[in-house]
Image (cartoon, rainbow, N blue to C red; front, side):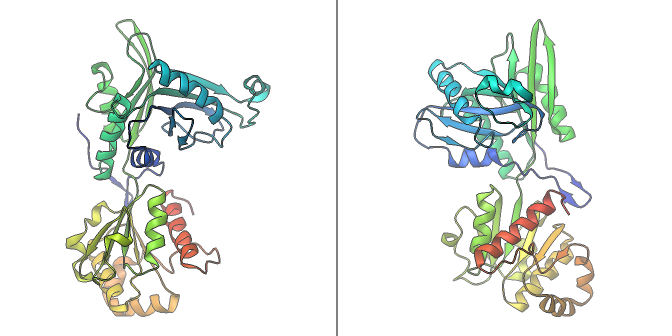
Length: 355
């Protein structure tokens, strides 16, 4: 089954802000530790996480990720231990709407219901293989799907990838890919009454940082913590050092070559912050000519932005609707770390189509 490049709608690349998949695949223990994968497959009412959210629960009780604000995790760990010991997947439900919540002894008061699929997820498991394959697609900027079968009389419960999805579910997965949307499916296949959640996975955000000065480090780190893909470009050898940006792709190149060293069509947002006027002008000239990404952030005060616009001349018109400067939400930031928080927060809000 194919994967595909996400379409551009209204000048924006398709994007997924729930990066629990990437965070789990990147941070899961490398040693062969027994573990269970918990996936939210259906919700009703107000819940902390939505369908497609995932967490890993290890045999020793430790975990990666959250499915609630902490109110369900203790109970989930008990069920996860049984799944790890038995090797059999199961689905469990929590209904926290009204007084029935008391029956669970949780007292969450979230006014929502959640169905969770628990399955073995050790390194050689089908679930781990499906997540790893999906992660390889999204890391390349490609859309893909995961299918979580959580109720069936015949089909084994669990998470399937594009290469392993049962034939009778392939059409639903293909439709989700074509429409770039997730769906719940109910299917009666040769007497097998089946319920599954087909999750469409758009690529995680890809942030381009133009300029690798010291204050670019916390920007890249903050974006990486969210599970975003990060690329950093700078022409200065002392700055374009991959050791300073763990997990990011670092490219040393002249600003005037930006369009040839970076696939700008695969970037969701860019922040220009070289602190070098000529370089910033060159970066912005390249971005103007490319017509993308749809979000361009510029570090520095309004007076500097005005001077750069003058230097750009007619090229400034190609950035008019895309340029955000001074970049960052006004949170009263003073330190480089707080400024990075303000920058990444503004990009996140823009990706989420928040004002």
